[in-house]
Image (cartoon, rainbow, N blue to C red; front, side, top):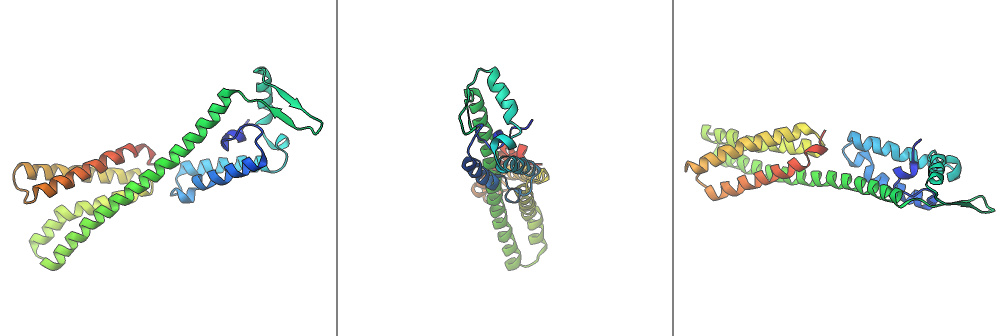
Amino acid sequence: MKNYYETLGLQEGASQEEIQNSYERLSKELDPSNNDNQDFFKEEFRLLNEAYNALSQGSILKNSDSYKPSVASIKNDSSSISSNSSDSFTVTISKEKIEQLKNREQTTEQIVSVAKGLKILSILSMIGSGFFILIFLAMIIFSGLGFGTIILFVFVGAPFVLKLIGALKMYKGKKSGYNIYIITSNIFNILGIISILTGNQTEPISATILIASMITFSILFYKYKAQLS
């Protein structure tokens, strides 16, 4: 039997107003269209709507699949159930059950928060990569399409193009984007460090700052790797 109250993050016997408020809040957070149509959010959104439809079609006692097993469980736990002349019930739920419902709601909020954090990080990376791409394009335009300029763009500008593509794919929740981003960053960082150590880098301070920022982004993206599919 499905516990629709648990899906909505509510206690057994919640009012129709509480059901409606919880549904409106969670439907915005779990809407697949707001989360790049990831499979996880599609499934959670489907379960959310199923629970809402079951609990909002009429009487809670008639429409909740979870009511009967919950009553049986409450009896076994010596929980109290009382009725009055209007056939309404008051159910006492154990503290353990309440904590379980709270933990589920917190988990959902954490997942939504992680997805938003990944998007923000991806956007920042795309902005940074795009900035350097524009710089190299400007160099080509103002310096002419000489062989040296083209080589410079291929070996220095091209990695930022790949990083931009990787960040864009991660924004869409694709693990392939993470692989593109990390591999490109690692190669660029290794070559940059070698150039600094050998004294071939004409701007060692700027190069060091750039490499440090790229390593920082790589570490941050690694923390979100499990959220990519």
